[in-house]
Amino acid sequence: MKTVKRWAAACAVAPLLAATAACTSDDGARPAGAAKAAEACAYAWSNVVERDVLTGVAKRQTFGEDGGRLTQPLRRLHTPRTEAATETGPRTDPATALRSLGAHVGGGGEDSAFAEAGRPAPDLDTIRSAASGPGTLVSYAYVREVTADFRRTCTGGEPSTGSATSWSVDGGGVLRCEESRADLEGSGPALEAALRSCGPGAPATRG
Image 1 (spheres, helix red, strand yellow):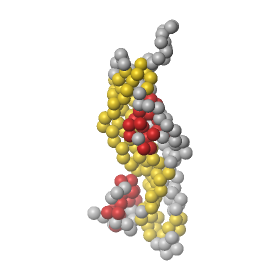
Image 2 (cartoon, rainbow, N blue to C red; image 1 turned 180 degrees about the vertical axis):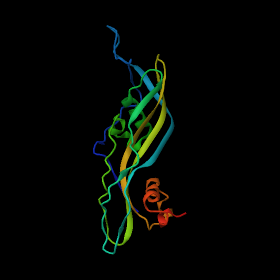
Image 3 (tube, one colour; image 1 turned 60 degrees about the vertical axis):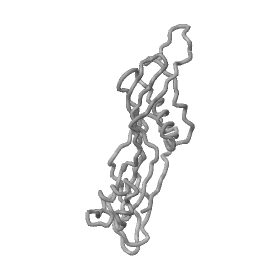
Image 4 (spheres, rainbow, N blue to C red; image 1 turned 90 degrees about the horizontal axis):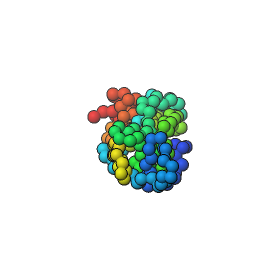
């Protein structure tokens, strides 16, 4: 199995703000002469799930002895979202919540694009690869998705609860349907792509 990981062009690495952020009222209004310092807020995260999710897969292509290029387009299966929704209490700023989640999970979550609410899903371009010999190949794409629930507490204010989701790694790969299913067990997206495109009789789908 050949796997290629790539970062979306929008993912310029930048440090995150600390998990503690400023809380303001929903309309941002301040009484005349009020102190400009905002109340300190903190996020507590629960039910955090990080997993690689298949976003697109192509039809299988079978090549002869001379091989050839992969030309089948990827069909979208999942559109990842970047958002934070408040369920109870004062409205939470989505970008602030996502920055806190990114700091909590670390790794790709510390990229500035992780906290970009409403970020477009990555394009599903065909993995640019070629077979050098005979075989049946399938190309696929995936993201590393993060979902979690939060509770935000602010000094002297009412707490808020809600949920957030974002994604970090934008990757893709090419698998051979002649591979054994055991060889694909370490990659959820690759195994799912094989099950969807290789067919029930292929070694990659048996067992």
